[in-house]
Image (cartoon, rainbow, N blue to C red; front, side, top):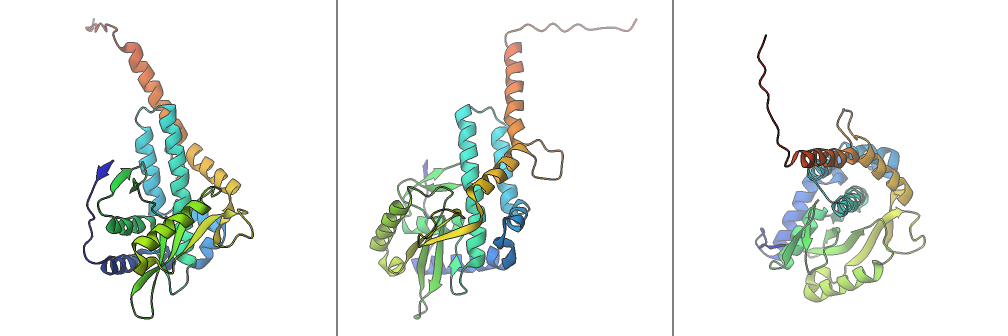
Length: 264
């Protein structure tokens, strides 16, 4: 855990305006055709060929190329599942959102929350960062008011298993409204979950796949190389590292005698 000052300057309106402009230049809403996010058959390939996925896979590979405990390997799996779902949920919401609303990426959302609470300690994870003592949503929906000011319209929470999160996130929104009422006064929460989760519950949006579909996708990523190459799948990397470590342990303390041979 480290403490960092915010890298942004200016008022909250200035920072929010800058983040929205950045988002409009890079958002999946503009770079991804709308029909791609309607079906897992098109969304999965689009994600697997995206720079986001390549970055996650590279981080996972580097992590597993070092000797890890079983608990550390399970931690990687959990974080990778959460990050991949977050990525695809962001692609869906940023593409579907209303013309009057811009959805900030998880990274831009964290950047804005850090500006609200610039002295909060930052927690490092395998695939990203968060704040130690403040709830950071997965996304903010941002829109301009009739007066031309920026305001937060939506707190997005992307989660595969949202059972215990509804009340908690609603309470966190109350804190945001208390701390920054001029920005959050009219904001609402919205959960983005797999199909079939909480039918009939308001303030829920779904991605075009079920939790079981997503589980199959994750297993494919972990157990098979997702690229058209001979790269070793993630599941093999740690096995290989452990085999190499075990062989090194066997040699540890053993005197190796080098015999020089000469041609006859």
